Image (cartoon, rainbow, N blue to C red; front, side, top):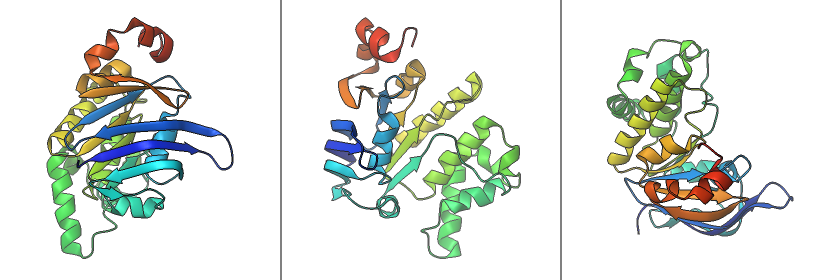
Length: 239
């Protein structure tokens, strides 16, 4: 099966105890899988393990049929995994366009880089309006779109996003979610980690609930949101 396939992985920090336990998931091309759960559930650790920032102690990670298990982060990225960590992390003193180009470091030659820029600006046309502006002058929502655009410069097979809605106004939250839906329709597999449960599940085809690094359940958004036990116990009252 093409896409992202994770089988029974275990991951943790340094020599400490495991944070993620026996976790398996699949994300097919064009699909959005929302990973939800309360703080400390292991969501960020999961993304770091998939992108190679943390080694998997057990299990396998495969992307489009290729085994990425044990590869360092830069090689995982070259194989088609893009990771947008929490906090956006744009370079404030550089222009929007130059921040975008940083994501295309693996393209050889100016023509290939220009082609990648054109593709991303077509997907996220708002970035073209801000091209000359310093990234530090952009709003939080604009910076989040820039961070996503920078990740797309590598033409990823799978896109990992960690809390992309944090700190954004409701209007920009909808903008970001709308753009993610368009990116998925283009064939990218998206793994979305987000505290805003209802909004993330609104655009996802499936959801997965984590607690203490283990999968509690998976299902359609409708199935998850109708399980009161999950909402109260794992997602937080009023999720």
